[in-house]
Length: 246
Ligand code: SAM
Image (cartoon, rainbow, N blue to C red; front, side):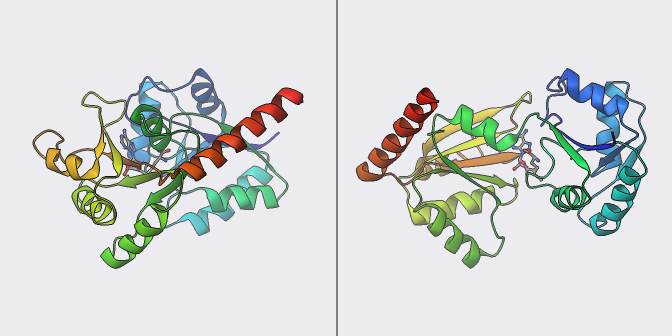
């Protein structure tokens, strides 16, 4: 049966590829990818000979129709992004909607994700979290968004570029200088670094101790007061009880 596979690929360490991901990429008729040069390195490493087709932010409307037509002809397609999971701050959502609307099958082959890898390593609460991807670039919009996010009783996960990371941490500090923030850099790679500190202290470590190079995830501690913490614990123990009951 023709299927669209959403395949997770490494976020930096080529060994983080599942056996199933390799097999699916070998078996499908076409791999739709953001940048054929980036995915070409991965397929070369795993000796995958499947043809690559580009599917990215700027051609996705046209390519969605092309890929749905291929599935309707009985072909199978794998969608990958440059790194990590497709659709997560990466293209693919419109394609999945179109494929499902056409009554065709969609299967995810899970893999690494930078936000979750950062959260797991950070030491900040993983009970409840809010993923926001990239913040707006305009300073006033960024500040407004951060104020809103930083009122929530959840860990906040953000992606940021090395060019804007200092500005973003400075904006976080203007909202709450004492708030604990984890900066996760170059995850799964040789110079991986995850530092968790009040954001005011984190800013002092930038450049000398934390080079502004590579890829970054920011995890902001949630705004918890004792009542909210209690409510979360109640909700969690209720879930545990229900699971146990079932
Ligand atoms: N789809 C990807 C995923 O599942 O994680 C995210 C794609 S998004 C366009 C790229 C951003 O993810 C980068 O700008 C950076 O913020 C983050 N990122 C990706 N790889 C990373 C890594 N190895 N270490 C830290 N952050 C990373």
